[in-house]
Amino acid sequence: MPLFIEELSLNAWPALKTMVHQGWLLRFAEGYTKRSNSIQAIYAQANENMERQIAFCDEIYAAAGLKTIFKITPFVPEALDQRLEQRGYTLVEPSSVKILDNIRSVKEPHMQEILIEHEPSERWLRTMASMNQLTEHQIEVTRRLLTSSPLKQGFFTLLHDTKPVACGLAVIEQGYVGLYDIVTSEACRNRGYGEQLLLHILKWARENGAVKSYILVLQSNASANRLYEKLNYQLLYTYWYRCRSEEGN
Image (cartoon, rainbow, N blue to C red; front, side):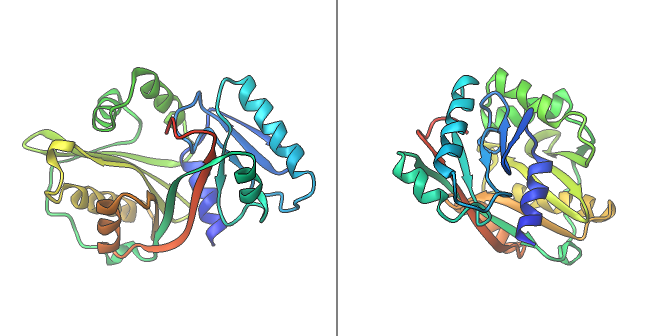
């Protein structure tokens, strides 16, 4: 199941371009988000020619004007992480993939002001960008990444007294709903808005045929991890990135 969830996450948050090289997926999205601008070495398990593979990736990303970033999951060749460390790649953003096996067990939300859209509208993009402090370029890349997906998408904005207080994205595929860009306005945190947003998303997911949920979360985000544990999300696997610097997303 873990590799299946990894594939769902690749589909839910795509790249603008993807290149396949000997079982490695090289993803490009003009530098915005590590998820969409990293190498996913999940299909070629052999360790031979690894140095040549890494050098090839360095050349391709340098030509694109991007830093070379590898996503290290339990599914990559065993020696890859060590090889990258030896080449000077820094470990950044240790993260967890968590799963909720039964979304029908989750309670109903009590806040009723929720806006649900089925495409990344300008209103949703601007709300999300404001809460995440995105640049204009990052907003445009996000719009292009999330437009015209063949998957069922929901773009959520939780309101309080008609003002946005939290927002997020949900993507359904094969009975699973993935949660992305879940964020609460900085001025409105620690008031339960994040939980209410998640409850609305899971309610929508149930109504649209999903039975399970997964989420990707930074291990350093203590408040988010507490919330997901409260909703009974369980650790499935961990991952991190290897890159030459900690710049970017």
